[in-house]
Every structure is written in structure tokens, then in C-alpha cells.
Amino acid sequence: MVELTPLEDKFYLIDKPKTWTSFDAVRKIRNLGKFKKIGHAGTLDPLATGLLIICVGKYTKKIEYFQSLPKTYTGSFVLGKTTPSIDLETDFDAEFPIEHITPELLEEARLSLFGDIEQVPPIYSAIKQNGQRLYVQARKGLTEKDVEIKIRQASVYEFDIDSSSFPEIKFSISCSKGTYIRSMVRDFGYFLNSGAYLKELVRSKIGDYSLDKAQSIEKFSAEQYEILL
Image 1 (cartoon, rainbow, N blue to C red):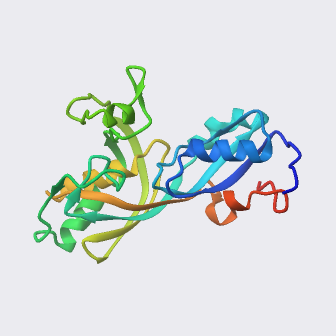
Image 2: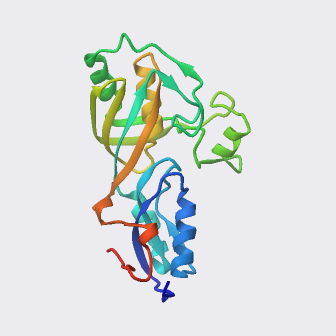
């Protein structure tokens, strides 16, 4: 492989692979581009895929701006079961009834999570509390009942669901900075007097930047090296 020439003061649209952490993606791009100053603008969970904006050089000063932009996600969640992480990172811990759930009740749940809402972030998150990431505390066995997690404000601009594959619900969400999709899934299950876990999540847009303009990490090479502005 041809060695890359370092290029600074840029940002890149990257399609983060499944099971990679956002830091894994940053570290790989740093090594491929031989960048000295680099960071990402908005964490994606390891099991999520999709758009990750990686800033280089002076563009790292723009990270806060990119983080402030609205986000769009697609994916699916499944009703009737829960996991501690609210996704498939952890094993199932409980089952709940779903026979009582009607299309009308699904619509009520959807509307309850539309507009300006309050959320308790998942304990499996990168939020720091008492100097330690919450997910570190969760992996030590602590639960949401053991740790007081502060309520956060969020705004949901669009929230569409498709229940044709019930109990799996497909969705599309456009939301503000700081919205936790796993919290929305958990709260959707709560509203239905049932449970839910996130099966799949893809971040498709950040502001006007879309996933179809992103490049995969596997193809981020000298031969296909491009700056996607």
C-alpha cells in the first residue's frame, strides 16, 4: 500500500463498522492518515453502524459544532424482552407480555416520545459520573437502581414506526444532540407495560451530511483517499 501524505485541517465522513467503538475508528483513521490531531464528533455505540464525522487538525475545534447538529437514525427494536444494555451487547434478563399491545397503543407510545422529552440515559453509556464512565460501573454489576443518573432534555423532530413485523418495530428518528435512542426504546416498552430492546441502529445523517457520502474504513486507503466535504 502506498504511504499516505499527512493532510491536516479536514473532516471525514466515515461509515463506522458494527462492533467497532468510535475510538476504534478514530485510531484506525489516525494510523492510516498519519494524523497528529484527530477526534470524532458524536459517539456511536459499538453495535450501531453509520455516519461518524472524524475531524483532523484545526477542524477538531469544530467538533462541538458538528455535535450540535440534528441526527437521523433508522433501525428496529423488539418488544417483549429486555437486556441490561437495552441492546444485544448483553444477554436477555426479562420477558414481558405483548398480547395486549394494539396499533392504537403503539401510536400512543410513539406520540409520548415525540417533541420535547425528558430521558434518563442508559447506564451502558459513556457519560462520566463520579469520575468514571457509566458503562464501566455497569460492567462491574451496578444497575440503574444503584446509580443516580441525571435526567436530560432532548427533542424528537420526527419519529415514524412500522409495526408490520410485530413484535419487531422498524423506526426512523430525527432528533437533537444528546438524544439516546436506547432510552427511547426502553421508554417505549415501559409505556406499553412491556419491555423492549434495540436490535439494529444506523445513523444515516448528521445535519446535512449523509451516510451515502461516507467512506468505509476498509477503503480509506492511498488509492481511494478523498476528503468528503
